[in-house]
Each structure stands twice: as structure tokens, then as C-alpha cells.
Length: 128
Image 1 (cartoon, helix red, strand yellow):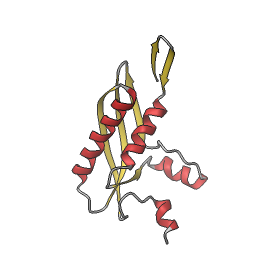
Image 2 (cartoon, helix red, strand yellow):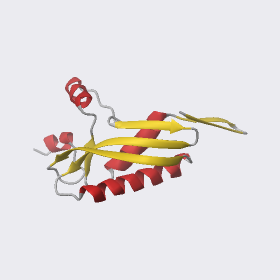
Image 3 (cartoon, one colour):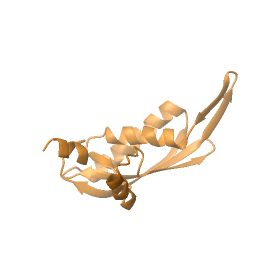
Image 4 (cartoon, one colour):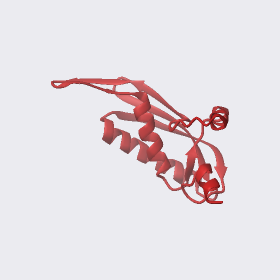
């Protein structure tokens, strides 16, 4: 959690808020299908628990933040290009929204799925 004090009071930005910014930003990039939390995701899916920031880890140091993201990419997309776009856009968005300095955005591509850009498993099931 980041805490800032000013003349009007305190401002706190939680790790969860930063992870949510990263998640929304990553999912907006063409070629990213979804976030991936591995085995935990499967259990959560069975139980019907939705966590928008699954697969994202935030590491805070005073004024900097590092982000680890586990993602699923769309089949046929250039992995290094999509990953670089995610890194650039997540860094830019978090810095603009929070004033923090993003030190690193580490991307792990855990899987590839054959879906049209941006559609999740749930959206695919609805469209069948």
C-alpha cells in the first residue's frame, strides 16, 4: 500500500487498486485473452468466485512498484509484440493514475488460446 500525506489529508493506494489498473489495462490490449492464476484459477472457477486481479502480483518499494503478470495470449499473435505492448501500456497507465514510478512489468505467458481478440472463456460459452 502506498500512502501520501498532503494539506487536505491522507491518500492511500492499495496493492489491489494497482493490480486492478494493471488487469484492466492488460485486458484492453489486442492479443491478451485473460489473466491466468494457474491451479488457483481452476478452483475459483469451479466455486464461481471471480477475482479480477488473479495472476497479478504487486511489489512495492517506497515510490516504485514492480508488477508480475501471468497472462493468456491469443493464438497467432506475435508474443513478444503483445508482451511489449502490455508492459508499455501498464507502466504508462499506472504512472499516470497513481504518480508512482513503475520499475518493472514482468510478463509470463502461461497459455495460448484460439479465441478472437479479447474474448474470455465466459464470452466464448455465451456465443455458442
